[in-house]
Length: 436
Image 1: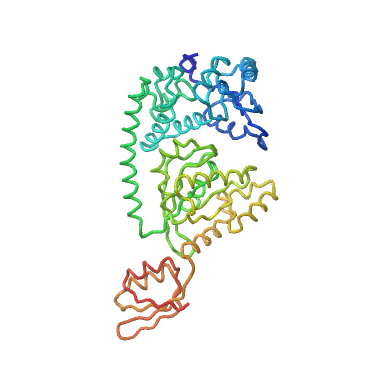
Image 2: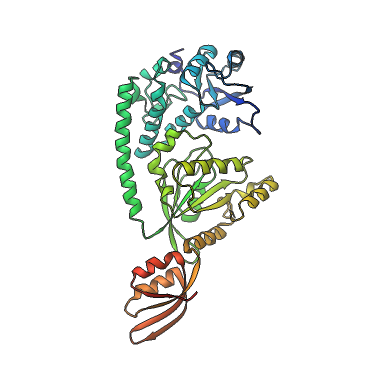
């Protein structure tokens, strides 16, 4: 069994998916999302095996009898890999592989594998490698000896398919599965990512004068499509999970001419491995430091409500709990269950409904963001010298001038301006009186 992961050829692996449901079970199709994940990893799903268990078996998770039934299905469907929608202990994986005689992966390892194939930039590769090593470190038992000879992806290269799903990623750094070597590499990666963190913090600090917005949401909710629609960013858009791992930031001109910075970031998913959340801290820094989060929701997805809960859970985990959020219900043009849309609108009355693909509702989204950007509008009386053209230029760019009076080299301006822009106006040397 120790050689199972070495002998697989580079090809579309035939996968059987397993969901072990504890107790009363869950509603809906528990394997729909795992199917999408497996297909994203390059597998061909040949069978789906859902089982209710009264208690988790410490040896095989699902029990010896169910494991034997699974072995029969593996042979019948000529499967190469069994993927569990649960997180398994190393000994459970080892025992299951002994019984079914093919490779066994759990949900976390599958997600980590997908991230390995998506990583393109140096930063993303470092983050994925760190997450994989931290996942592997406590599992350094004899069942991981396959990594002694796996070439590995080195971060998503063509060679990464060697060994199939679950063996791609840092590979070369794991030639010797030894706790000391892995621990040393983890320390090295953390140092490199700390440098990335510092650079990211410096980049964000240079943007202090601009209002920062970050798009967050469940994977494949349409974040990159929205970024393209609002900023002409020309980001590659793909209908697959975790298509984007790197943050992209572009300028967005709102209704009325105000300019903000708009970023998208990695998509979230339920039960996202905590190793990924930790290692992607630099990427998620955009969300942590944003003035406003746009929470994208695929409203056409039957599990939209559960996805909202999953995203909120991850946001809380990275320190964004309580951050200003504007819910954006995307793909309204694809909604088939009107009742679901009405229910979610009742629960989230301030949400903006859009279709990033067709452009429907984008003007309303811009207006809603502008209102958040202003933080409420004030009527001001602003006094400055006529030579200080920056004040008048600022008021024309970010506010609405109602009246101007010129006398003896000074100018008195009545204008409406957002509360959030008062600080910037004061920096320009204006005397400000709030009228209402």
